[in-house]
Image 1 (cartoon, rainbow, N blue to C red):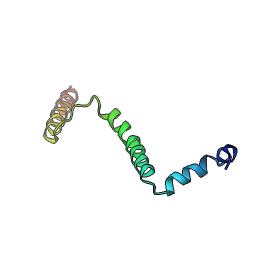
Image 2 (cartoon, rainbow, N blue to C red; image 1 turned 120 degrees about the horizontal axis):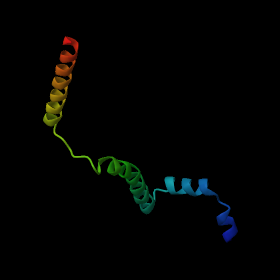
Image 3 (cartoon, rainbow, N blue to C red; image 1 turned 30 degrees about the horizontal axis):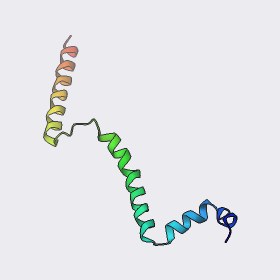
Image 4 (tube, helix red, strand yellow; image 1 turned 180 degrees about the horizontal axis):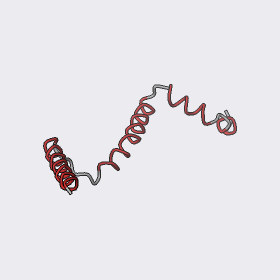
Length: 78
């Protein structure tokens, strides 16, 4: 097969070969690629966030709720 025939194969044919070949290196490359697709957005979302426990979240929500209710009660009393 000449180099012209290989170049004329096309992108789709090459991707189908990689997808359906079952070759170990193609499977590993697919696993790495899919892992990267999911890991990059996950890393970007979580890089600056401090993880809170559920209890911390509930306490923060209760505090905000009580402040909101106290401020609305004071404004409606006027």
